[in-house]
Structures are given as structure tokens and as C-alpha cells.
Length: 172
Image (cartoon, rainbow, N blue to C red; front, top):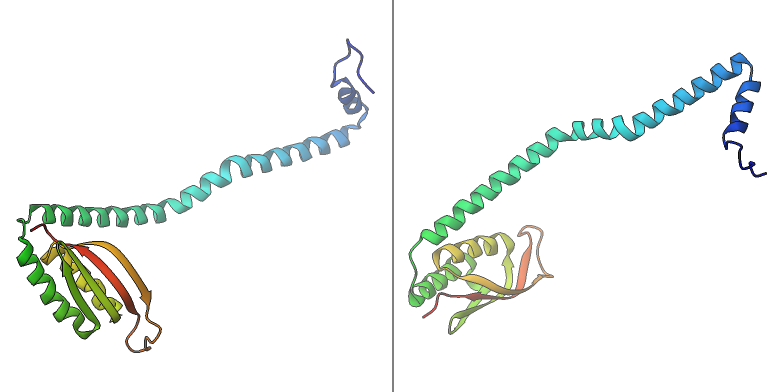
């Protein structure tokens, strides 16, 4: 039933409220207050308290991230400040590091300013150490990597990688 043009839409609600006994009105107000408090909790207080509980953990994580960024910045500045390296010197340093770190699990082939490293069952830890050493000592920058986890990795030796890794050397 539609309200008449001059009738207020909530007039029926007011009339129903007036018909309620005093006890029923108090119970309805109490129920309304409980619903209002629950809404206040779910919409305003609970999210704020959850954020407050997580704040310390997030601050610690951000501090660790900031320290890592500072370390990376210091490393980048040290690399920028280091003197330019000649191509031949970089090549010798790269070849020496391949023999020392990776041994028989790697073969190095150089074409111009690009060095291609072929790996067969190279230990992951040694490969990571070699990459860091090649970047600093030979100024070699990785360009492309096509690596697969070696299928025959034994439990005692950890993860091993096979594939190719291409690096850019300083210009001649």
C-alpha cells in the first residue's frame, strides 16, 4: 500500500511504536543499542585494533627491508667507485673464478664482450658465490640465464643446476 501524497513514510512506524507496551519499547531499544554497538565494533574499533596489533611486526619487517636497501645502496656505490677494468683483465678474473669456484661442472666460452657459461650439475651455493664474485671481480653482468634443476641431485650435495648463463664483460 502506497502512502498518500501528504502522509509521511515513517508514520506507520511511529504508530506501531506507540502501540508497543513500555517493556517492549525498552527491549526494542536495548536490541537496537546492541546492534549499534556491534556495528560500531565491526566497522570502527576491530579494524583499528587489528592494525595496532600488527604495527610492531610490520615496523620490524620494514626496518629489515630498509637495512637491506641500505646495504644494496652501499654495494652499488662501491661498484660505481671502483676503477674501470680492462676487457682482458676481466676475462682473466672470470676464468680464474670459474676454475676456482665451479671446477669441472662449468665450461666458459667467450665471444667478444659476451661470456657463455655452460653448467652441468653445478652446486647452487657455489653458483651463487661465483655470480657474486664475477660481478665484483670481473665486472661481469648476467644477461640471460637458462637453468634447470639437475635431475640427479643427491641429498648430500643439495640443489644443483644445469644449463647456460650469459654474461656481459667490460668493453674491449
